[in-house]
Length: 105
Image 1 (cartoon, rainbow, N blue to C red):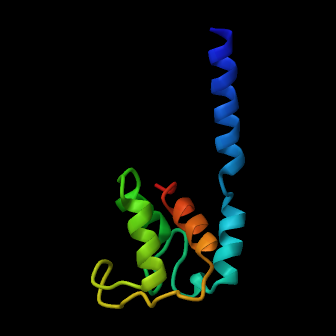
Image 2 (image 1 turned 180 degrees about the vertical axis):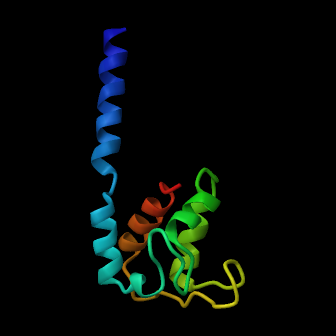
Image 3 (image 1 turned 135 degrees about the vertical axis):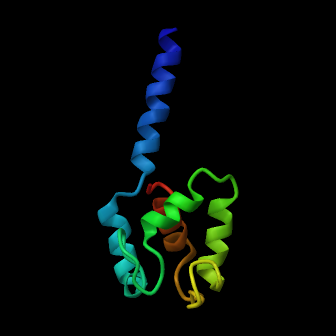
């Protein structure tokens, strides 16, 4: 039983160590121009990230779908204004931001 508790504690600690903070996510967003259209809690040109998190959080395929949508762009989900492609943004930055957004409720 003691070994199970130690393993569980280690897994929990490693998941927190890999979690991106809001400050880190916002720094990545600022660097890549995401904040020109998105904010955490209010709609600008695009949806508030908290609304995206509410809509897609918990869906098994959400991360993969959002990675493609952010990289290639999208339309007709959050209104008439399309999201432009972000082909020059590093895949690692997109993945970090998508994972962060999916934690928001």
